[in-house]
Length: 163
Image 1 (cartoon, rainbow, N blue to C red):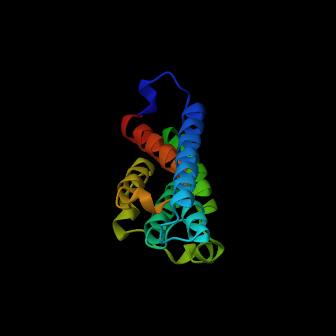
Image 2: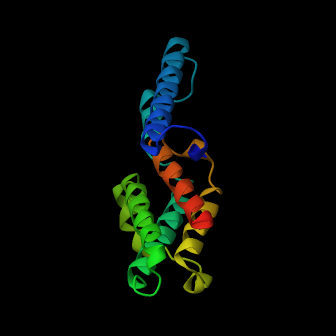
C-alpha cells in the first residue's frame, strides 16, 4: 500500500509507529483523567506491549510459515535463485515477529506445525499463506510494535504476488 505514496518503507513504518504510540498515550491520559476504566495501569501497559493470549497461536503460525519459507528458499537457492531474496525477507520478518513473543511462547515455537499441504508450496506460496493467516487475528490484540511486522509482511506478500 505504501508503494502508492512517496514515503520510503522505513519512513512509513516510523510514521505508523509514532501514530500508534501517540494514540496509546492519549487514550491512557484520557483514562487517567476519568478514572472510570476497568483496566489498571499495569493491564494497559501489558496490552500495549505484549501480544494478547488469544492472538499468540495465530502469531506463532505466521512465524512457522515464514520460517518454512526462509528454510525452503535457502535450500533451493541453486534451483530457484529468484526466490532467495523473498526467503531472506521472510527470515527477517519472522525474526521481528519472534521478538514480540514472550519467553514462554518462544520456547513453544518448535511445537508449531505448518499444514501438510505446505510441503508442496513454494516460497511465495508460504509468504502469501502467512499473510492470509495473519488476517485472521484482530489487530486490537496486537501491540503497537507489531505494526512494523504487519507492514513488512504485507509488503513481502505483495512482492510474492507481483514479483
